Length: 161
Image 1 (cartoon, rainbow, N blue to C red):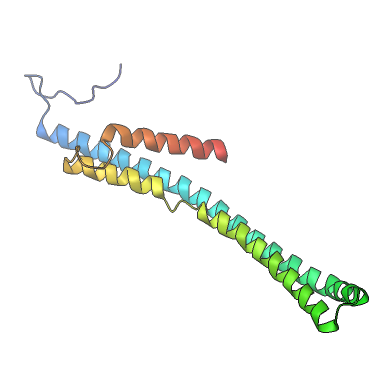
Image 2: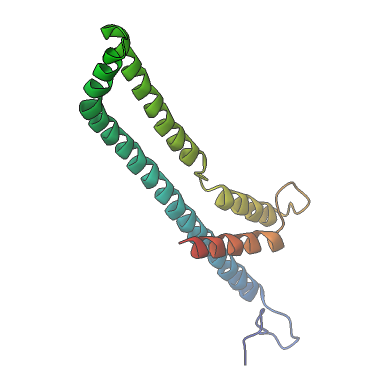
């Protein structure tokens, strides 16, 4: 059989204050563990995004250097062959590389915007604190909504990675 939620220790069937405090401490401990687990899951997802951003930035830089050394002169002299002045040909080549670098940084910017910064953990912790304060009518989510949100975040993180 399972243990009752509130242990009965008195003859009249009511739980003692010590039992109630023990139950509250157990519940708060479980809540803190769940919040820490959610924070770890969110940090792992953010770390993956940050790693991809750094890797793409490095790749874009390395590709830019290779392209600069291998094709700059060929392209510039090809433009000169078409009749463009020497200085204008090299300026056009440099402008093309500026556009390439800007596109790479745009990809990095888009990836960095997706970093969540523990938004779900903050929301659930604020909701939990509001419940502990007894502010169930506040703007924070109620206790019944905080844990399912944490469970949904865990399920989403486990499904994604």
